[in-house]
Length: 539
Ligand code: OOB
Image (cartoon, rainbow, N blue to C red; front, side, top):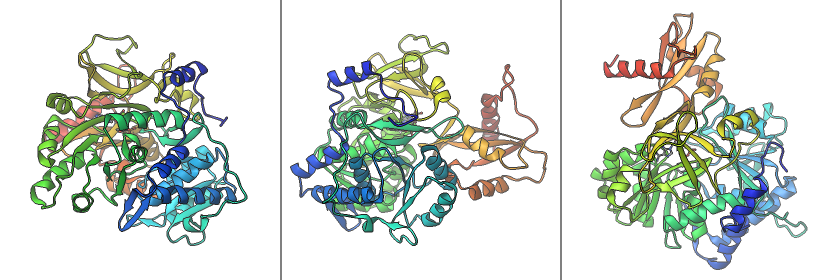
């Protein structure tokens, strides 16, 4: 058993097996099955390169042997930071086959975050592109390797320099047997959006994650005729499994990988590949809707556009269907588990005004007040959830787990919602110290801590401010004795430190003190009001 991992209690595991949620199947087996059933169907398209199910299966196997020859073993942790590429899938399935555990970081993460993921999990390997979006990952890997002593291998897709090349890892495995992997084994780690100091890691077993995929495939009606355009990073839970790229592979469909989400890249791909399904965050939906008015591409193949990751306003939701001649599906999910979908045949009113309902009949949700007491249906309160694909603990985070989960094993989502009579959820707000910047999550405390490491910053508090396009942006209130300190200087400081660009505050406000709550804590509510007022008067 991996230290720091809290296994499912026997009672729940037995329940989810006996009610058919957990089948014991593994990701490695899913790919093998599809390679047998539909060997010559195209699984992945990246630019001019196409890979069939059989080829994907074969290449994943050769890489699995390569990893074993390198000495990577079952349960070893491997930080994976690849863009939307065929290599991402080959590496993923290779690691699944040998039971090594990928940690799905995002292409935007920088050395501070990557170093932390490697250190926290004692990772033995780190997989990167050479250059992506003008960022030099090899240089970054050099810096990370200096600091992390467990890290033995840097594996590069592209120009590997002094490190290992993915292609060179491919190996024939005549003399080795792959380890046995079961459904209850850990498969990988997802990252939590977070609200406290350091990002939390979400452990996932094959059983629980494949259940969520199977159920999503059913609800979203994916099949071998699905042509899915992956525009958001595939490493994110939404694009990965709701039903996402893994759902498409499960259904035998075809994934087209978009290097970026702009209409200029995505629309020609939709026309060329006759895409019928894709997933967007709300700001992208806005950009696509605007672009659809002026761009002359044939987008009539689109059947479903999902929007999720942040609240989609009714105003935007109303426009998706008419702009693209397709069905909108709202998706309200979380990397920790629970995913809600509007159903494809729901009435317009449900699709536009709600964030859907839980995907599984075994999702237990409750909406409670400040004292964890259930409230009347229709009242607004805190959402808690327990179920066959919602985690019961973060990895290696004992103190945090005590706060994040109730005594009876419900996850406190930090979302404030209300429920309709027929079970649909409407997201009304949040009680977690997080900023949702157009779907990208910023844990306020994490960034505050980075700012506090600047010698001229005495205190820092980050809050959200409303934004017509992204929904929210971040504003940092700073107390400093140095009058010369500027927001620009702090931005440069954070960039140099190496953190994902979306976490760098959009605005800085210098103050002499923070408003306080009656208990003497910083009142973020008052700070939000201050910045809203300033924005309203355009100061
Ligand atoms: C998805 O996952 P995360 O882990 O990046 O973020 C989860 C949080 C939720 O707790 C909620 O606060 C917010 O993001 N959220 C939404 C939303 N979808 C996510 N808030 C309002 N409306 C929505 N539709 O973001 C995620 C994971 C799987 C599927 C979809 C999204």
